[in-house]
Amino acid sequence: MNMRPKLTKLSSLALRELLCIGAETNVDEDDCEREDSLRQQSVNAMLSEPSPVVLADNRNRTTFDCLLDRSQPASTFNLLKDYFKKATVTWQSESRADAARVLYYAAIAAAIAYHGQVITNLANKERKDALIYLADATWMPPPLAALFREAIDTLRHNGNQSQ
Image (cartoon, rainbow, N blue to C red; front, side):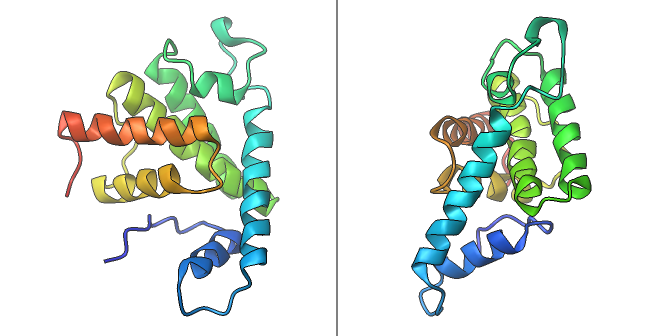
């Protein structure tokens, strides 16, 4: 059974990454490492940018700071989720759109981990598969991987996870 998330808008970078995992492919492992490195650089760059959600208590804060701030209300994470969801289809850069997808799921994970709130209409299985995939991604910055794992654990503990 394939446990990969149904991320229909993933770029060719992600598709090549999926190919690199298969044992019978002829994809060059160095190419996969370069793709992982590019993806990690894109995510890290976007995390260091000023947060697109500017509230009185988080002016001059980065997206990274907002995503890891447990004191932010769930509404902040919902705004971030909506912003990055729109960015996945409006940004022209493939690598930035991929990074926006990661941050879209990170906002969802933050609301789940910090507030126990599911702020998406994604099916439980699709949400679970995406969180697991991103938590285990080798290119994921460790604090975000930990956030995805915490969201998975929260869902499991609260019984909000379909099997």
